[in-house]
Image (cartoon, rainbow over all chains, first blue to last red; front, top):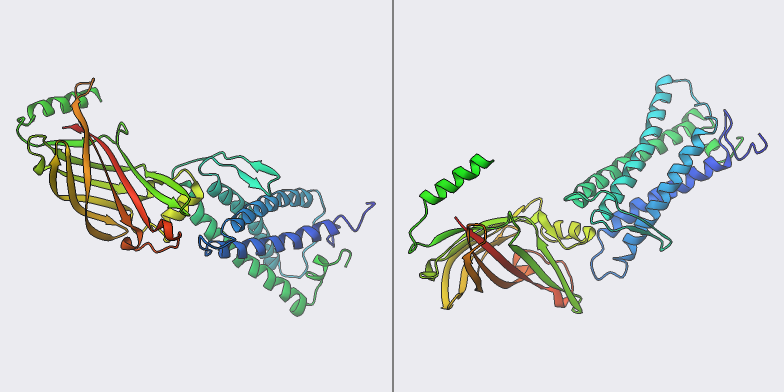
Length: 184
Length: 191
């Protein structure tokens, strides 16, 4: 390949994958915190409306990034898992798949809350994401699921982070380092 | 279905009460000729309107003996609709109606005082969010008579203002929005 530092190889991640990983991690943490915070705001807080607008807009952008990342992942080599335990690899792959699926389910349920009355989602005032499904009590049902999914995602994220720390300090392999620097 | 309707028609004809008795009317929610609406100030600058889409009830009424009138209405609180999903979700949540804990709101009349032809003060027990309070408010008949499809109908309207904090709702919506006006617009089909 002409850009070995951009694309993945069979042993390392390229800059694109690394950027997707950390920027999306930042967005996921941000959206989780913002979500917990905004529902506690009261009517007379200055950010009562702005916080929700930001959460929806950032969520849609993250969903776009999710799709691009998946396409990038599928068209790039997958760096080989490190470590000698097969069960560890299986659990890691399952966790990765869950992270993707939970994010997707969060996008869908979040979208269903805000569009339950047929209103579109305005994304940073740039474009609108139109409503599709508008079922009875859709906002309530989607809301409960969205909340549960968010906490489940954070639990898997915590497991994922603990595993990275374990690889770095206990196994002393390059699992964490290669997600920071290409060709490591 | 046809058989069922025929049977219902027959039994209604057989059981037809004599004219001097108060008649029972089923509120026409089937044909949606009845509305439970609410109206609350927004910031003190305008009105926010909404309604409950699902409710049920019946009333007794006889123009010759209005004091015998009574009514019972049950409202499904989760059917709240203010034409904005995010707001509806908030209003149905624990900050406001807490509909998963308190799925129904009811009104059961305890008395009616006639104040003129087709007018009166209705008293009763109103339950909202698990709190029951005795309230009374004026009601007015809009009209009654035969409908074009072989039935007999009567319609009323009434409205009352509730203090949100009386029913455990203390979320700060601003000083202009501590009370909500509930409007009942009903048409009943005589049974």
